[in-house]
Image 1 (cartoon, helix red, strand yellow):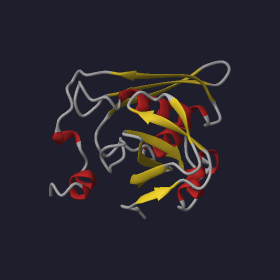
Image 2 (image 1 turned 135 degrees about the vertical axis):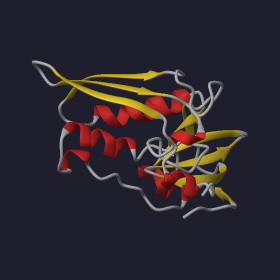
Image 3 (image 1 turned 90 degrees about the horizontal axis):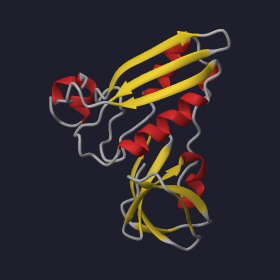
Image 4 (image 1 turned 180 degrees about the vertical axis):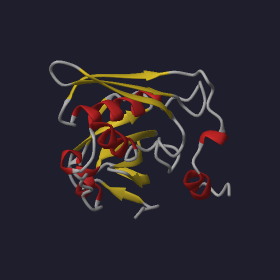
Length: 178
């Protein structure tokens, strides 16, 4: 569900500027255009900037509230839960999740005495892409919500460089490349 028209914000809500990740407040009455509604957030164009609004604030945009399933209730290993979370993270500019885009190079879970240490190595579609801070912040926030994760490191790497062959067939189909 995506609105192409400019809409008036119904109540004040928090957002994060893209690509800087700086937290801002969008005031009631502000005019925005929703450019993307994927995963658990909305991307809006407001005052000449792109910003990400959490799905829980969808009502402020006149949209439905997007609730994420509590990953802690899912069956599977800790690594399965991490991959499920990663599949719910979308590039603000490309309507495909980071896993199917081939941006996640490694996900490592290291058991420790108290909890687990998680290391994720990821890349961007281009070394100069400004979406890095936004994607890293979203991934960090969501992974930290998983019970059993006590340490987390999300590392942005550019070797090997990303290329279209790293995308899943699902991503290629979504982007009209198949």
